Every structure is written in C-alpha cells, then in structure tokens.
Image 1 (cartoon, rainbow, N blue to C red):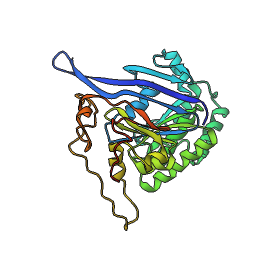
Image 2: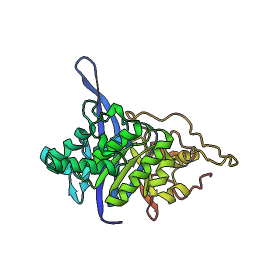
Image 3: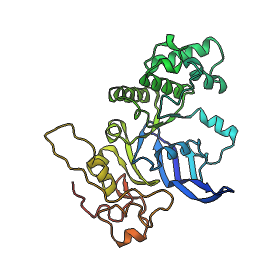
Image 4: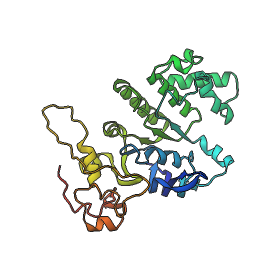
Length: 329
C-alpha cells in the first residue's frame, strides 16, 4: 500500500439534545466518540456494526460534511479539521460520498446530465459545451449506463441504475477518496453484486480509496482490505479482512460473525445471542461500553475504558482480555 491518505485522531461528533420552552440543552448524543484510524491510498477500510452505532456519522464527519466536535482530521498530512469554506471547496474535489438511498439522493427535478455536470462546471473541471458533454458520456459509460439516457430524469431509472448515476456523480470531480455510505443496502441482492463489482473495477482503474460503511458482513468480506467494527460510537476491533473473519478477538465481533448465514444447509451454526439491548448514545455505560452485554465481563470492565490496542501485528481490539480469553467458536 502507498502513503496514508486520510487519518483521524480521537474524532468526536456529539449532537445536542434540546427541549423545553426555551430549547435548552438536555444532553448530548455521542454519535462518534474518540475514534482513530487511517486509510492508505488504494485500500478499502470497511466499517460494520449495528444500526445507530455511528458509522454514517463518522464517514460524513471525516469528509467535513459534519463539523467535528473535537479531534483531528488529516488529508495527505494536512490538517483539515476546521477548514474555511474556501478551503473546504478545494478539498471537496478530492473527497466524495455515495449515499445509501438512490431514490432520495438524486434531485427529481434535475436530469442525469445536470446532476453529473453541475459540480464539474462549479469546480472548473470542464467548461460548458462539448467538453462537459463528452465527460458526462464518459462517466455514464464507465458506470455501465447508456450515454443517450443522460437527459432522462431519476424516476425513469431503476434503483440499481440510480445508484450507478450516484457513483458517476461522485466520480465527476476525479476524487481520490470516496465514502460509500451503505451504497447497496437499498438494492435487491442480485443488483448488489453488480454494484460491488463495479466499485471494485473503478477502484482498480482509478486508484480510488474507499471508506465502505455497511452492516452486511458478507458484502464487506468481498471487497475490504481492512475491517473496523463499531459499537456505540467507538471502534472496538480493527484488523485486516482475513484476520478479522478468521480470528476475531472482541466478543462483539464474535457475536456479529456468528449471525452471518452459512449457504451450506448441512452446516449447523448457532448464533451467539447477546444479553440485554444496546444502550442509547446519551447515557453511555461506564468503563467498557460493551460490558452490559458481554458474557465475559469482569469488574475491571465496569470501571476502566479499554484502549484500542494492538494485540497482534496489525490486529487491534478494545478489550481488557483480548488475546487472553479463548472465545467459543
């Protein structure tokens, strides 16, 4: 792998809770709580976890769609945590996002040509006229769509075709890094594989780096370089793909993997059921956030926050007993 493209250090994003007649603050939702990771050029880092764990918020904060509460963000070694609007515009051409819902992420009043060309003209990538037309045709062809359909509107396309348009729009500014916010979760299974294969082909052709957000561990296994597991706004395990799937160190990762369906009906696999329910992001548990549901929790887990530490080479886990307890397979 090449140089580090994106790095976040102790990143936090809290959303205030307001209520009452004067709208006074009543607390904070800690959507992202002290997350650190880096992404190298050309790799795919995937984030997995239950709904509400902060995956999408983390991705949007990392590319400055949300203003971070605290922490630092670096892009190619330059800190971008609090860039001005002018600085953010320059950065935007290098960092893009593919949204989850292809039905709501496209403006129904804009045809495909306008949706893709708008940013190119605004950023000075192309000039109005033949140059823009050629570039839009090139992007549509690259994403498996017919250029002659560029003057159609979103409602005239299927969900898979709309997501291809969303990908073409993300590529319009020639980015280096793309946040993929559950880009296939709203699509049929048969279409999901087509979109995943397209994204992998584009990555190889264009040298793209992905932060791929998903709750589908099967999809993540297919395209990831490394995988991070999130729980209540924090990363609890981070490892190369094969290492994480074959030797998970955190009990939460173990539970997630045990719930992945096995296509062979002769293989009997019992999912590991976690006790209790996932706590809210307002009043977080003391110590290890997972201790209220962990079958291996001990006194220290209630009192001390376990750091995300390297237990094996390139394999990090936020568990006091990672590497010491043999979790049941």
